[in-house]
Image 1 (tube, rainbow, N blue to C red):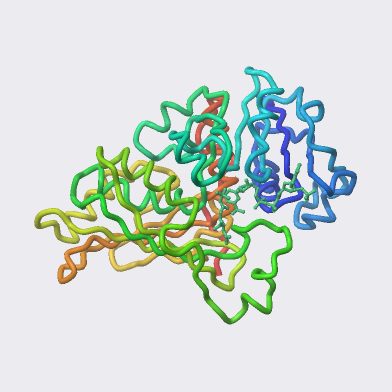
Image 2 (cartoon, protein in one colour; image 1 turned 60 degrees about the horizontal axis):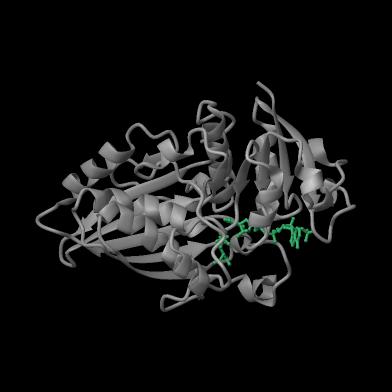
Length: 342
Ligand SMILES: NC(=O)C1=CN([C@@H]2O[C@H](COP(=O)(O)OP(=O)(O)OC[C@H]3O[C@@H](n4cnc5c(N)ncnc54)[C@H](OP(=O)(O)O)[C@@H]3O)[C@@H](O)[C@H]2O)C=CC1
Ligand SMILES: CC(=O)N[C@@H](CCC(=O)OP(=O)(O)O)C(=O)O
């Protein structure tokens, strides 16, 4: 089976990571690569690491360029995917790395992103309850946000098992590539190096409703989420520390069993051996989430720590995993589980 694939937004960080993974995918042939203002330039100018594609020219992001492929990945800023997808036809698999089709609730969309809700597509975290069935054979996929991917995977098993209250605190340290590669003063090296800073504090980050959506579905009731992102001087990686009040007398061993039962058969979500704690470096470039769970008996809280590479499992790896499911390929095809550490 040869799957012809196009990538829109190929000059960006998510597009570059998609291409790195697609180059190693045995069933994929890489077709059109498109961009915005950088259309007309060579891919190698933007991603010198992608040597086999260095001489490929970036074209304009139009439906005309993207048509004629089996799969189209959209790695564009929010708000661009609905119009392009509508022009591509129903038989093409469209995998959207942006936020446009993640939220179920039209009011949530308007509140957090503005404008009319572009509609909801199957949600691209296969390991969440019921998601895999919706992704198999899907023609449209909404890849999850990077923070919701790791924090939902960290908390959903406990909520589904009813061992915690649906009142969750998430503090997640992130590298700067999460913000994309467009120039922004607060991401200059002089601002970021040697410093850690918070942003989107007090429930102001747009990933909060996406987390609430995932956690409420697992809990069977409306969940509360207090989310604080922390920018750290690293290029890639997210380390999310999540906690929630315990229900009943759950100890660390019982909590650990909940997670091993939930993820024991998952190829990409790994519960670390007892006493080992996740570190971002172990997940870099890998389509993995590393988790560890414990109970803080004095605080009466469950504490779960998760690590991922925001560009791999948090975007492009998750996107390729969903493409595999949509096409009926083995879900793990072409996806690394070995990270780049140190
Ligand atoms: N970075 C991350 O960790 C994650 C990103 N995502 C999502 O992936 C998408 C891409 O993000 P990211 O790669 O980080 O962003 P970048 O800013 O790095 O890349 C954006 C890409 O979109 C292109 N582009 C920008 N404006 C337009 C336009 N008007 N028309 C056509 N193409 C355009 C850019 O082309 P040009 O170079 O020509 O400007 C570039 O190729 C976003 O929706 C983001 O939210 C999701 C999860 C995590
Ligand atoms: C460091 C940094 O700025 N990170 C981004 C991550 C968002 C992201 O990449 O996800 P979306 O697909 O929802 O845009 C942020 O916090 O907005």
